[in-house]
Image (cartoon, rainbow, N blue to C red):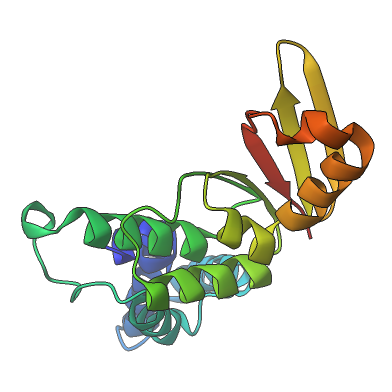
Length: 187
């Protein structure tokens, strides 16, 4: 399940192994040159993807997010297990941008901490939509708040700092309900 999220890397590693195995076959000079060239191309891509320790990264990520064993059928997973598998796959892909909608739903405390650690180490931009104020306090570095019909506020800081800013600038108006739709994290 999780391994499918990094299928490109899995396929490249398999191709590299197949190429390496072909070197034991009798090859003429032209075949050897083509094989060496292809192996070099595949190795460059694997190096760029930091793929050589994929198995240990998979095991570490699956363990940290408490994913079920890799051979478990997806049809028997609970909502929390499905969410953990999806988060694990996303973090292993190392995309430039993550969009997470209520990522803390159905997560236990240990998995939540692993997610926070993963987001802290994430090199890209993360956009989180969440009502979990404690989670936002721990991971948010910027808040983009949509209030009322047309007011948009950009704030550098976590959720508690934003709430304090709101109280100082709006006074009593800050206690009225407001809707915050997006939180933006950047590194």
